[in-house]
Image (tube, rainbow, N blue to C red; front, side, top):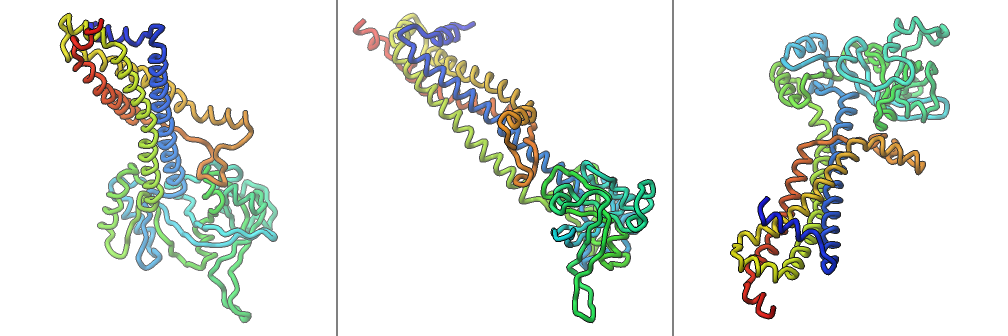
Length: 425
């Protein structure tokens, strides 16, 4: 151990007359501890939110959606065959998308109606957890094992989200009426197209917006209800690498040519993910201010130690210590303070971040409230995902701030004149 480090460590152990300096050193360590821990926890939550949102969005939605400028795709089976020849494409499925209204008694709710090809849809999208029923029950043949009344067994099936089922007061194997805004011409004028459907499944995606506003029909039933014939709205595509979705979409467009065009998941959710990234940067800057405040405490501590140790510094210089060695003593003292706060803050922050879901559930049970109400926030639980690259950046930036905070006091100590300091001793 060098004598500079030895003296720096010795100065950290306060004597009785240096108690005030020791208290400020403790406050500095506490400030760095809180700043580092807060940064790690908050960034882990931000990473968790981004990952959870991406997983939820890419569960219900595909990685790429292929559309036609004319509005509908006719020979969709042929187009799907060409798409699946593109490198990186895992699977594809036809899609029908429309707006409609669901009616049960006096309750009415607007929904996004989606028609799915049951055989291929499950290879591309994931509805999440089926609370009741089964997506396969959209097919009348698959419902053969379920004992239903004859009048119900012949009805077309519909799968809805749990929040939509709550708002309408609908249970499994009950009927709802679906109304299309595309009216039917009658002698009495235009009236809404309406048809009775059987609720064959209730899903829980974990995403309130989807659970409250989505309804799924089989492709054939949806085409029949909307009178679309044998056309579809678009084709949903799943790829092997979600971050290559943009490049694969361009390849598909180039292969198929006009009038086809493709949108990838990043384009469809650009605003949401851009906002999350901006929030993450802003939170990093705001919480770094806690570390800066602690760094100012380190500066104050070192300045007071330099004033207290004038005689010691003068004696060391008289014994041959160089200005560089004097600087090292106080740099080591400041860095040790910063390192202790950073290490403790990292340990505490990682412990909380890695167990945040269990901690949040315990807090909810203890105080009897919901941290993330489903009807307000996108997610129902507090997610956390530690990115160790972020942790490394936090540690490096914190130690750099602590190092910079030691420069002025150590320079002042190194310029002390021994003769001036010892004149009245």
